[in-house]
Length: 293
Image 1 (cartoon, rainbow, N blue to C red):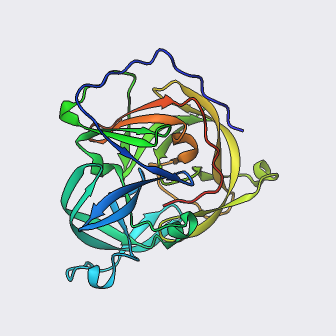
Image 2 (cartoon, rainbow, N blue to C red):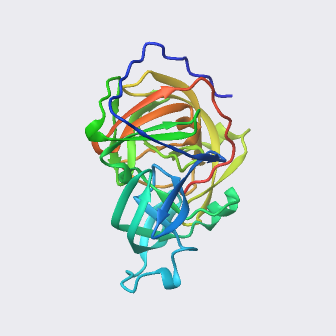
């Protein structure tokens, strides 16, 4: 069991102006929202680790693809590289924000639909919330969106940066400094470095799947996590590779904090200014299997 966080009673923050509230559904821990893409009502997953807008090739192939479609691209996922394509979205609306002429990529998200048991038309990342504050409230299952120009917050916000498209924060794992991405599209926490098989002799392997339908095996290990600049220190379960197994390599990114971690907070985030505030919730959900969009 993961230890519960203490309630922070001294936290103060203020909000001025009017926010629009949009409700979402939680499907096996994934944040499923409604959107409208090119005149069609669709389901999108808010995936903070996604590179902008990622369309499901099941719905954006054939006649729906523009004639100027680019050749196949090589996209990088948690388990390696996979094929994707470019797509030009003429117009779409999500969380009250209208977008025109948006560049997107198309990939195979069939594994995600099969796992969740419903149609998923796309993934959407934080870059599509630039210029706004967003409050992700798991208790009320809502996302409050307010334009940056009309919002005013005060509180212990932390700064984050981007490694490629993934928002990252500085942490310590078992006392060692690590750069970890915040990925709401991952059910579990991952550490990319491999460890000795002797540390995981009593655990069971877990299958990890990414947006390219690539699969790999990891093992669960409990470690101590501290988040720099925030009053967060707790034991967390991380999925790791055994020594000798192939692992995801990125010299700027050591691992990922997924739904196991993020869903225990009310999250206020301003992508345009790379600021985030994590407010511990009263209760923690229980998550199990691991899927990585």
